[in-house]
Length: 283
Image (cartoon, rainbow, N blue to C red; front, side, top):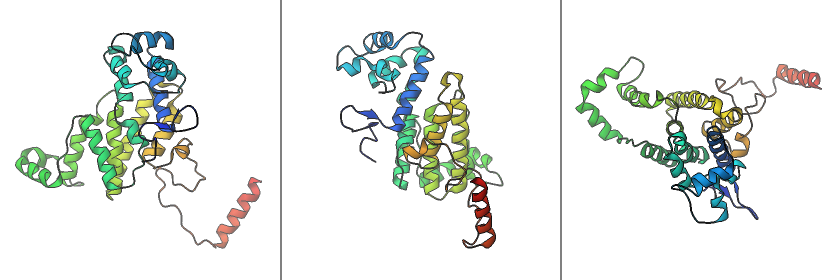
C-alpha cells in the first residue's frame, strides 16, 4: 500500500490534500449531507461538530469540519460522523464514512492474501463470519437437509449454498456501500484464485448494485464520474488517475462483454490496408 493511501491523504508541500479515492468519498459525504440539510456549513458545524455529542475543542480544521467538507477538502472526522449517525435524518452517513467501501476502492490488491484480508474486513463490519473449507464441509454434512436442497444441475452444492448465503445482502434496499464493499472484495478474491465464472457474477452484481446506488436523485452530479471511477478501480484495477477517465473503446484495454478480441497476424495485408485507409479517412 502506498504512503498516504490508508489515511486518504497524500503528503505534499504545504497543505495536505485528499487523494482521488477519498476525494470521491468527500464528494459523496457532502452530496448526501447537503441533500438533507437546508443551512450552511457554519450552522452544521455548530450543531454537529461543536454541539451535541460533537467536538468542543481542537484544531481549527476540526472545528470547521463541514466547511472543509463542503469545499471537498476534507472528509468528516469520525466523532462528527458518530454524532450524525445518532440523528435518524443522517444515520446513513455511517455507511459512507465508516464502512470499508472506500478502503476497498483505494486498496491496490496484488496477492490472494491481501484480497482475503479485505474480505475479512468487510465480513467483520457486516458482522458475518466465514468458515474455512474443511469446517464448511463438515458443517454442510451436519445439515444435509438445509444444503442439499440448494443444489442444481449447473452448480455444485457448495457454490449454490454460497450464493444462497449472499442473497439476503443482495436483496437489501436501499443498497448499502458495505454490501458493495464485500462484493468488490469477493470479486478480487475470486479473480485471483482463478474462479473466473464466480468473479464475473460477483463483478456483475457489484456493477448493477452500484448503478442502483448512484441513481438516487439526491446524488445528482456524481453519477457518471463516481461510477466510472469505482468500476475502474475495483473491477479493472486501474490506478486512480486512469480510473477517473471513462472507458475508451479505442484504447488498448478491453471493454465489458468484449474479452480477448479479434486476433490477426501483425503483418496481415488486409489489416494494414484497413488501418491505412481508416487513418486517411480520419485525417
